[in-house]
Amino acid sequence: MQRLFNFRQLRLYSKPQYLTSQTLNIPTAKMSTGTALSGGAPKAAETDTQAQAIANATGVTTESLTKVLQEKLDAQHVDIEDMSGGCGQMFQALIVSPQFEKKNTLARHRLVNSALKEEIAAIHAWTPKCFTPEEWEKKKAG
View 1 (spheres, rainbow, N blue to C red):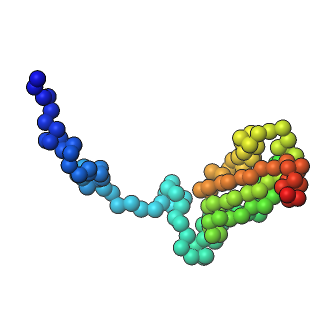
View 2 (view 1 turned 180 degrees about the horizontal axis):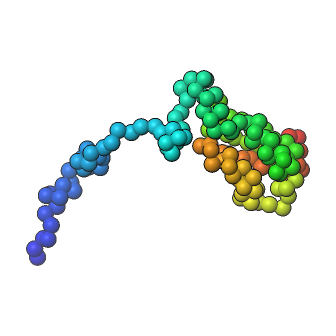
View 3 (view 1 turned 135 degrees about the vertical axis):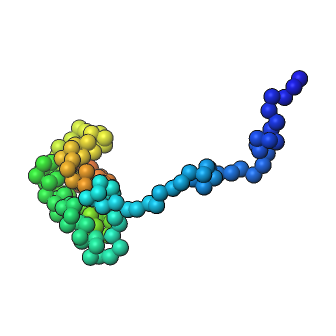
């Protein structure tokens, strides 16, 4: 029986090579960070001054998010933390609202995301934790 392939020529037994732009001889463009005006993702802030400027440009602050949630979801308690160091790109939220009654986690998140549709579009990461008033009281007590 004749072999169809010479496995040594295919280098299956040699050290594995990882595919990169250099091993594939593909020219690479220099990566650049975009800005909100150029359509790319906003640059990461390197200083507090830059962080404040980015937050002002997006218009998303912990206060603005809190206000929207209280108005649209009748939230009784809202605690929002800016996890991005002040540049307004990554938020973690704890939201207590009676509108979450009889809703599972996914439905609660969808409700919050629909209330904050414009704000979420302007930020990088959003992590809500949603509780009914009864669940929140149990969590505080226990």
